[in-house]
Image 1: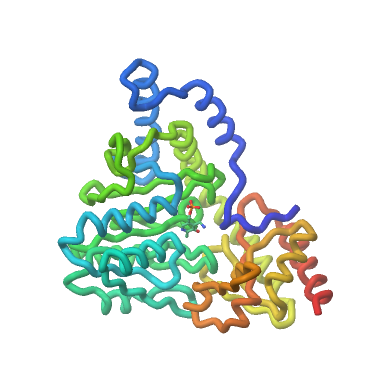
Image 2: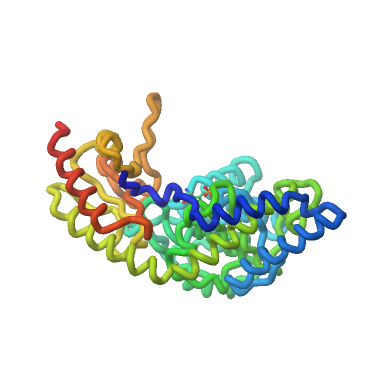
Length: 373
Ligand code: PMP
């Protein structure tokens, strides 16, 4: 098997899995319980939270455990808007964001009367600071921009945007860092809210974190017993908390080595793919090396199916259901034609891949492209 869909999800690191089994067996008590067992787990939960806080140079109360980046994005975006709507009703995002961001903005626009500016992305998949500058009004309370695009790997200049936004105390800056954390070196110093997911970096699916600066408040989406500093009620999933702490620690410790290695894989892949007639790249040259999006002169869904039959797993942009055909909103926003979108494939890499896999993938792709009429 050659798995090239790591931006979709990744296998759990055996070390993390081991921690899960041990913690789950030993510390099953409810962290909120007022007895010794509960207290013990509560103390360990605090430790896991402190460890994550330390990784990002934050305080423990700036770490909120969630069920993944979808929830982190929803909590950040809707939480800010519902909390601060008295300050203004204009919010800004980009047209290349993940559905969990875009659909949160749509809901706020359609159901809660917010005015939304969707910044364009260009053929490099990035937003422009100039466009953001022009979009800001006295009424703006939130800007949400992703760090790394999940379809093409484009990297937004988060530091530059954050620095610029510093002079607007009313504006809260949220970053969806799902495809960046543990992969790309970015500084989040001046970012108010950062969404993180465990399963893209060999942690568990259904596990995430929202980093939230202390001076930012949120309206909770889940009301209840007041867990997670009242931002996210519900009995805490203690084993997952310990595991995401470990997942993040390992990913950040290994980030530099993994990055260099994956960059090398990406280079080989680009070179080998360039030999194919009619193939072009959608990912810009300075994209995250973890994601490579390209088009061919055959339908991507057909090619992907043939690859899958050869035990090679990639993603297509054209997620076609039998009834409805939907093309990638990211490629569309980048100005790509419908034909290019239909013919586009996303390969996403990991330190777990090998050079041999890159070569075998391209060789198989060449054969498949010749076979398909
Ligand atoms: N944002 C981005 C950029 C993503 O790639 C993903 C996962 N596809 C998400 C958010 C959602 O993450 P999760 O699966 O943890 O909800």
